[in-house]
Amino acid sequence: MATKNKATPAPSGKSNRWEVNRKRKLEKQLKLQPNNEQVKLALQNIHRRRKTPTNREWSKSWIRIAKLFKLFSGRFDRSIMSSNQAVAGSALQKPGKFVQQSQKLMQVSDKNFFSLGARLQGGK
Image (cartoon, rainbow, N blue to C red):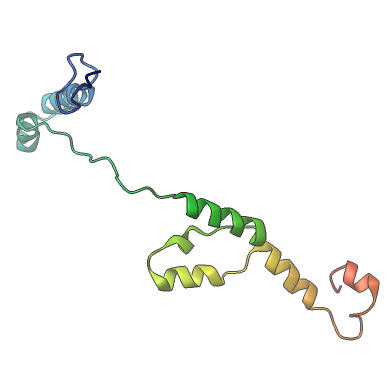
């Protein structure tokens, strides 16, 4: 079975919709501003301006790590994924909501530490 070459444009107008829309917008702007030289230059050189991103933001391993963080700490800061070690390190040191709750429970005064009521109310 022969495959279609993706480099050649399709005969339908669907593949160059962006080109038609861009030309229409530029012509509309030229009508509003007839002395604008930049619009005239842009009309002469209509090309695709956006390159599709190639690297994925979320890999399968990062999804698993994020789910583990969410499970154990109650949150996942996206700064943990940063390639900058200082940013990632500071994001790792931020306590989650479960850690904050356990720290509140640890702030029980010494004399009431062993009473059941104090432990149930979080030391209050």
